[in-house]
Length: 111
Image (cartoon, rainbow, N blue to C red; front, side):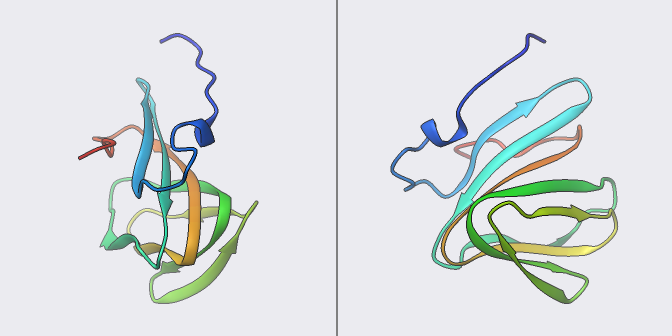
């Protein structure tokens, strides 16, 4: 795989698309750029296979892990251990973050 440099905010400059905007899949990693608005986000689920790390790039959102909710703001780094019940959503306005985790079937933009 060749090195890659892109500006994530150039993918949807008007900020109208919700969900995964970009996915990079390497032999070992999945990287996903996601954007949500209006309280939308990733529904509550449990992932028993992988740990996930992320960084908030825009706005504010809520991270819920095993029933505990935290406010996330721009610049926040988060870690979600495998096996935990998790949910991420916008706090009401624009919310964008980059997540990185070991490779697995990844989110596909547009699906």
